[in-house]
Length: 522
Image (tube, rainbow, N blue to C red; front, side, top):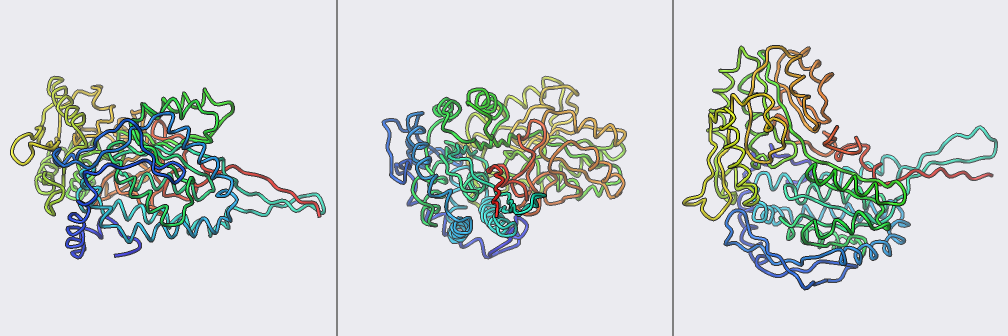
């Protein structure tokens, strides 16, 4: 199983199961240990430590990790700046070779990495393996792309005789890269690929919910031939690093994936504190809608919504969180939606082959779920499926909840506008497609959206009027989820992104370099 492997292909491949289950046993040897951070290629220990426990079962200790601070970030930044001179002057073809080797190594270790993702963040085997293959493909996609564009070296035309102008892209310097828990390899690798391939260096601060996955990926980068100091890995709570990141004038740029609140705070602080404008690449989540018209295939729509709303517990920035259904098919669709949820969404230990929905990432997420359900009910909403926190028996030591479908929630309630990041789906009606688009666009976010309709005119109207960067029509495998490198550029509009050039697409690398016009007079 190599190359372009998608979630759908993984579902159909029986050969994955013995390999994945063997990896579940093998990675146990890495659990429970103390791990360093890495600055300038050297193991670094601090006075403070923090523990990471598995959301599957809090008795499983993933490991003990270093609690870094602004001091460690500053040291790591200095190492990245030192390494920048050599790395940035390396021929782009040589950097591409190193990144290509990294993709091969990730593929070699794909089952161990997937098993570790399952233990650390609770993702089932199918989604964990799909994530690892997404990371592989994003690296290979950009290695191929940079060759196609000849390293972004573009001969120009001068009206002056004897001048030979050329446009090139040059790196900025040492970046801060901050990655989230929900795709601890794929989202980190996307940002790091952009940074490194274009000749920059990095201080990488992964989420404290998945530090061991980050350490294993760092080790593969070193094995691939990325020199010491080009990537530096610091661990610990984000608040311990924020001041050092935004205020240090040596930081060349920031790449961040996470919540809107944190992203916007970084954006404001960084742009206001730096001595001149510097790049900041943000992906900040969303509140993703799906429209189901009277001309939809309702079976297809129900399955697509269930998979997009409840895959990985709604803990995806692309997860479907609200559905607008044309009134004349509302009852039929709702019945199918409930039935598909009952058929597809098995809650349990994500190490088991039968599990679709594992635990939420932590107790805070579980408490948020409980609060959102209570707030919906108190506002007049009706929970027509699920809605319970699971705390007994096999669920007693993890953070498990049921998928929840809620109807009758008053329009204007805060839950229609807040990114919940838990498996709660809101359902409402509409009369006309114009009304549905108005509701779908009534949000500060703009990442993913979907429609189900067999009418090409309705689909085209949706594409022409929806204010989201990644849009789908009639996607059974995931109404708003499943973007893939080279297929769907993952581009956030409005409060979902800062650049309008998404990872997985042809323009993403441009975020990490600046143009230089070079002219030689012959």
